Figure 1 (cartoon, rainbow, N blue to C red):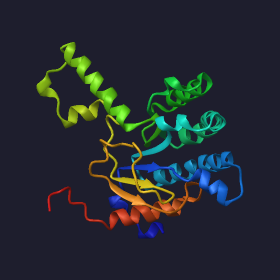
Figure 2 (cartoon, rainbow, N blue to C red):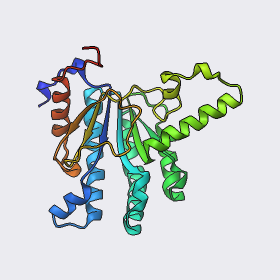
Figure 3 (cartoon, rainbow, N blue to C red):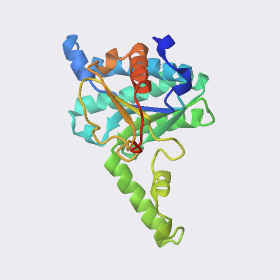
Length: 239
């Protein structure tokens, strides 16, 4: 599959809505928690493939602001899974030169989980091979509202003029500041919506929807998505 990819046209930034863990567990007669666990293992393979391909930024939608509405035991399991991810997977990511960033408000996470995540960020902060952005307690509407509040506060404090507010300035107040907007957004499991993910950044993203459930989304499936992306004509409204 790799030999069909044009290495000169790799997307700079890929974003993934990792959907289908619970359906995967049901189809495989497993507890839904094991579906989430299998999904966590899949992340490492995809990160490593992105590094190999030369992707500069990978953003994954790990836990949305709406996910707090799930059953308490499931939310607790997901928080512990994040803790396990930080303890077991950060070293190989660090060794590969991957910088871990968080998109979202982690202040609402349990203390142990939050502390472990902050250590992961600190440990990898000097890496420059690839940005690995984890959207955690993230909602794009919340992100935009937070950015607007920050802009308003800076205007009130005379740190910027109203005339300074443009698309570039707004982008600089988002979690993704300093990174290019995603050229390719992938959603697994057959659903075809953004679900409050990177709404501002996705203005000219290409979308790739697949029926593959996230725990079955291998490096080969990622390559299929990139090949389809490369076969599209990106016009940006100019034609």
